Length: 147
Image (cartoon, rainbow, N blue to C red; front, side):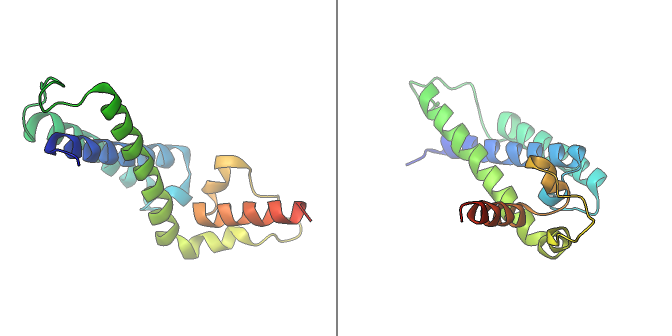
């Protein structure tokens, strides 16, 4: 079971990573990952505010942080595991929430019409569609190749 310090650290990592992913996606033009797809500049400001707010909350407002790991502090292995869990959860939450929020928008990029250039590969595909649609298209493509 997590103590208060560990759960606060997990929340700090989750919020910071969520802000970092939103900020980076907005800067890179990956509209399929944005919660506020229509406003990438506002997304950047809100994401930066989320990162700064999480930092200020964790280090200044939520209690003392200079705690040895022999007491209520986190030892290195636990901290690494919590960081990985928090970061992975933030990325997964981004994939799920942005795919739900932008579901209808991503449908337009799925139509492969003759004469249209193929969709970009890799992360570039998220500039025109959502993660869920890009993932589903990739799985369909792999199953077609396997036949």
